[in-house]
Image (cartoon, rainbow over all chains, first blue to last red; front, top):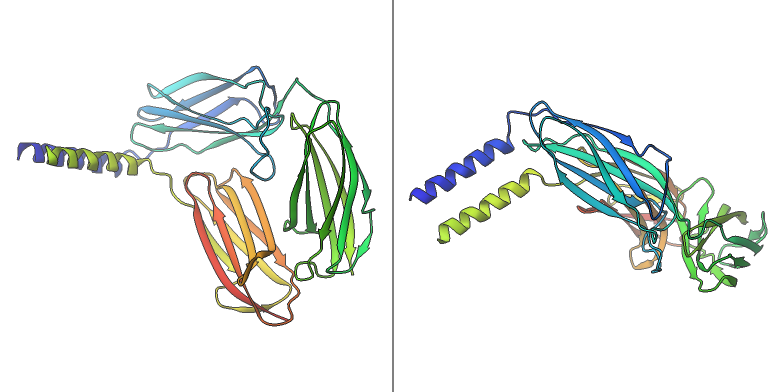
Length: 243
Length: 121
């Protein structure tokens, strides 16, 4: 009986703490990295911040993830880097620097940093975001992309086939060619596919069906993005017409 | 002993619910469930999350009896609490055809919404 009462007591305290009297959110300021900073893979990123609360801080949450377009990247020794760090904070005011090692296998490209702090009463600060780039010194040379077909301004009938033809090369090894087709002025990816590569020089020749249900008359844009194994990119845009 | 275990379970559940990540809210302004349209028709989706950034947004519109026929495919990753997708759906159909608008939002906590509608020639 005594145990039940003490458990109920703890539950009641917990319930009160959830419906807390202290509803003030802690404040978080992030000084580094700044937006558009470039961090080199194989070095340490320093995340400097100041957090404060009217009462007592509890934890800081930090997440870094890639902001590449699309998902499900091809497996490679070089991969998009991601990390989540949760550290305890003590006191009502904290100036801290968290060191995040960016491995030399981190893919080059754009990344997001997302940070927030929580106080002892579970009040969450506003989330702070930073957009930065990772540069990989293993390879800083962008690959070369050449599209020979279709040509800019080409016309097709709805239901026809579009032949995507060209070549790609790099000083290292190529990873893939991603291609999308959108209607001009729209973000709708009517075609979204990729061709895997494994050497430093590749030729591609793909037939894309312009399905008559999806492709009504109008202007469309073919976007081709070429990746090397370090995720350096090159792209080409070609506008064509469906009659 | 049994009561102590139940109590501890409740405690952990209570603690977990204190810091729980909340789902995003999805409002579909167009197309509306059960309505009939002709091409082109507007697509308007509003997503919000008061507690966390939205993260991943995936929107697909496909033919109900042929899910492989996708007429709208959109994905994005945003670090904001409110986001609106405004676009248009263009499609060629020879008879009234049912379509499904499918929305998936979030990263660790996902929110889903489906809307079914018809497009007439």
